[in-house]
Image (cartoon, rainbow, N blue to C red; front, side, top):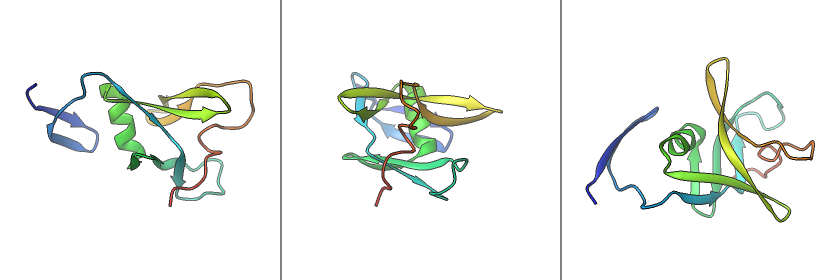
Length: 109
């Protein structure tokens, strides 16, 4: 398969080989600039695959490169790109709990 050049919010990914199918990644931790603030956005997400910026994760979801999910009990809850006042951010599909699935994850080290 030929290498593609993909334009992202953070710049051009040169020589990227897209996967044959979209790969699923479990999000196990997050970073926020102010962990105590309920209004501060997530800056990074992470898992067994490493840690990346929220901006890169948004680009990867929109390009169909990766699907991200959070494990809640025995269920996988999909992470998707939402938009508020023109700003994109990551969130999970609402479930039957009042706990925010992403924000309840531990801090990435």
